[in-house]
Amino acid sequence: MIPMSQNCITVWNNCLRIIRQHVGEQSFETWFKPIKPVKLADSILTIQVPSQFFYEWLEEHYVQILRKAIHVELGKKGRLQYSIVVDKGNPSQQPFTINIPNKQAQTPQTGALRLPDNKKTPVTEEKHNPFVIKPIKPNARKSNLNERYTFNNFIEGGCNKVARSAGVAVAQKPGITAFNPFLVYGGVGLGKTHLVQAIGNEILRQAPQKFVLYVPSDTFITQFVEALRTRRMQDFTNYYLQADVLIIDDIQFLGGKERTQENFFHIFNHLHQLDKQIIMTSDCPPKQLQGLQDRLLSRFKWGLTTDVYVPTYPTRLTIIKNKVESEGIQMSQSVIEYIARNVDTNVRELEGVVISLIAKSSLIRQEINMELVDSVMSSIVSDSKKFEQRTLNASHIQEVIIRYFSLKEQDLMSKSRKKDISIARQMAMYFCQEYTDLSLKNIGKIFGNRDHTTVIHAVRTVKSKINSELGYKETINQIKRELKVL
Ligand code: ADP
Ligand code: MG
Image (tube, rainbow, N blue to C red; front, side, top):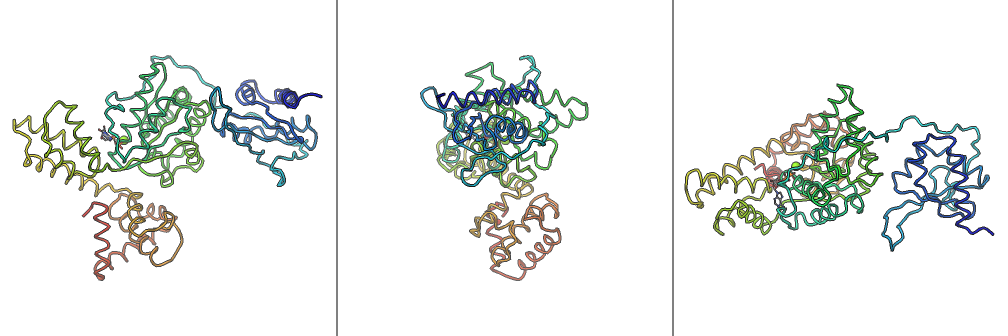
């Protein structure tokens, strides 16, 4: 008797012979060579594929030819099952896999595929292969990294502990940890750019030959539009496809840019499939990213999403001390504590105050005393409050309202007419109208695709209640304080 493993290898090799006649050489190499047959039992052939994406691609593009081949080899009862490698393991450990039946025509008893009689169904033709790469010269590669951002000067605190340690792990083993893609989100000035650039710099320090590519997403959009205009799309995509590590900062700007997203989606899939590391940042959690396609958002779940938030007092102290030390200047402990206590918005402002203090004190040749600190802080911090007032973002407003009223995340978008939810929703719309640049139409969209007239009604209701109900006005003021606009 032929051993079972031998048997599955033979059957798969026969299948490959059939498949080869129907797909191009490049596709065969890319999509069928990496597949390993692992088991044949009860007419179910299990094949191991390197990733979830790989499996989806096969299902989307080659399901017919796979069926046909299995059918020829195993007869009508033949079925196919995928074993997807989730974790590659190491030399002493087997890879960890999950089994999924071929999606279509699933049979309830076993979950495996029963092959339909599909002799007449045409075999899928290759229409488009985005995976042809023209190598570029190493000196044409630009990482765009700023060497100033390192792990050494990225102070750890509760506010960034998870993000930082995951970042260190990614930097040690880019592409092969479970953190791929790696997405860091959080408010402005909280260290997202610093952290992701530190990962890039560390990877380059360990492996200078790697192509680490950092790009803010608005630059990516500009390049894309320029490539469209000058008909150099192939060059543009080709460049990004070569990255060993792609860092894309502030992906919220991709919102609503359909064609750019489409292109990014292909680049993302290609790099991910080749185990290249993808790192992203955004100013809000993925589910609040507006105008991003679901298929892109669902890819983010493959890896790790984590947040950074405002540092607590002890972390702020350490950040200031570190900054002061690295600038090589003296500052008294009481001044440092005073700044740490009072600047509780974000790290960028904390740094702004310190740098401005240093500059002023050397300019006017004056010791850094409390008076000087006050004058610097009042200019920077009050400026920032004015700044925030103009540029609050909708997701921040939603977060604050959800927390204030102890709601569930989806409540504000839901159709629920429960009194407390309606009140909260109206207030959230009011704050969006008052403190963001969003149009009424877009505010409606954010809150569960409502009409702009609903938003107008909400804003009017809130304004009239502020003037007529004392308790209501106090609630609004409390929320304003939370939003730091009062
Ligand atoms: P974001 O990208 O989240 O808006 P940045 O990464 O630009 O924020 O950070 C703003 C400034 O604060 C930068 O100069 C950065 O070096 C500094 N910074 C932020 N977080 C830290 C930290 N944990 N330790 C030291 N510096 C930090
Ligand atoms: Mg940034």
